[in-house]
Image (cartoon, rainbow, N blue to C red; front, side):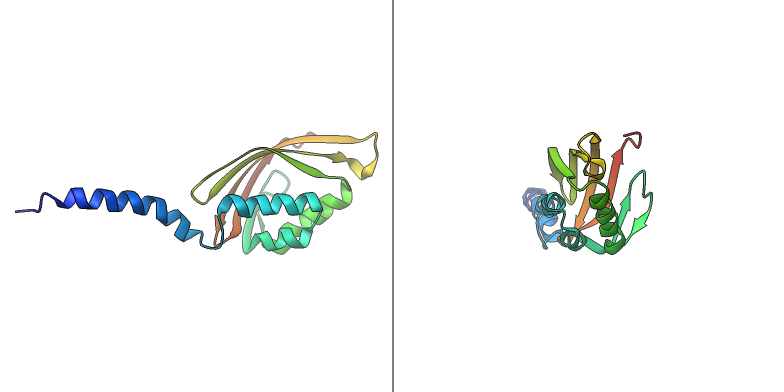
Length: 146
């Protein structure tokens, strides 16, 4: 005959493990902190720190770069953006996380070529997957008609 007390023992264990496993999977740092670090580096125009925030084999999917792989090429896209918009700044309006995924709504502001008469405001949404304290995947959405 099966032990009827087994479910009463297993449910609490499974419940507790459900809270612990996401932390074990992201032992390199909390996912939301990793993504916040990337945004802080962006606002400093620190492409080297952005490169370090992404995993070596990270992927970026966006309207302009549908399948970019590697932290160096990803950082290079930011270097190009900083050259084109020297006062670029990201303003986070919402940041939330569930497990290894971080969801960010933000706006990019600045001026094309630094010219005061060429302002830019773009609304974006990004979904990041963080593994071992680094961004492993970045799915970013925005309207290219800005």
